[in-house]
Image (cartoon, rainbow, N blue to C red; front, side, top):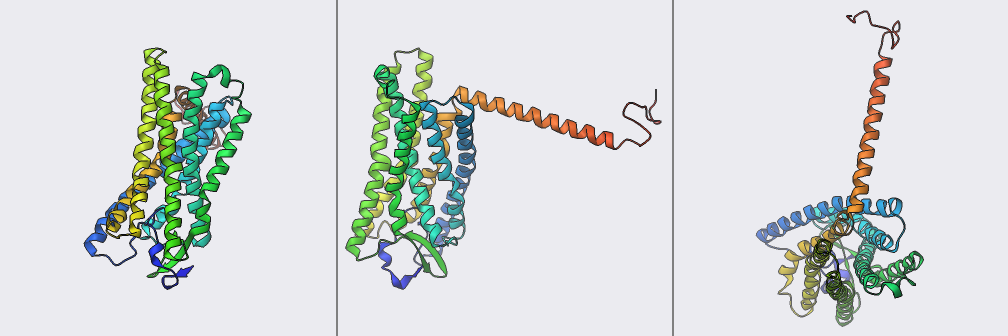
Length: 355
């Protein structure tokens, strides 16, 4: 851990929940930010609860209830990426609630950022793969069937995870902790002189915006348009349901990730001017919250809205409820039997029983 004097504080960035104030601000400005931070914590908490539950259900269904298919492999890996993504949210919630005081140490600072970034890339890339697979399997089925196997699907998944890890490696290199005004902040420390720091920062944001948003969004959008055109050949009911799902996926992806990447690009201007500092400080909490929220929308759109998945979930819930009620009934019967007087057997009438 470093002290403030040991580093050029100009290379501190706001990204990845670093929108806490590093300068003394006016009290009214701080109250405004505090309100937005509370809102972001509420969104984080909702994303954590719904994300862990929804993705957990999808992982369970695709792993143990579905027949192993290529589509279930994509869906399972997407759910795993989103599940791990939201699983680390309590650390971020604690960081914001402590007014951006990181108490988990230098190693966890790096690991938390690395895991969140890796699963962000993995989630986006698996969404893209899932959409491309739908399109190719529908349009080029005869040719694609020769190559579309479960084994190859797992190979693509492994490659996607490796690529996501490599794209996230800067977090392990530049993430650092710093002591500032009795607080410890977890931030990107780009080191060296300002010019090198600027190049590293711009390169990282540009790579993340291109690979983590623009290219996947364009791919998903174009593929979805082609899919909808192809689906017009089917019945109206099926086309209508499929079209709505595709539209929902595109809209959710854009609304959740566009603000985050927009603020990331805006942050690059701070190397030239600090005029956007207040806007970034206020806006990044909500933008980051929306980005995290995408990980609890995915299982709903791709999994829980699927009739087959929902039927399995409802059936399992009913079975679990029946078993629980049966167990409770059995325990009550055992308790009543044990409480009878010693002279009375279950079959005998109690002296207090009227005939």
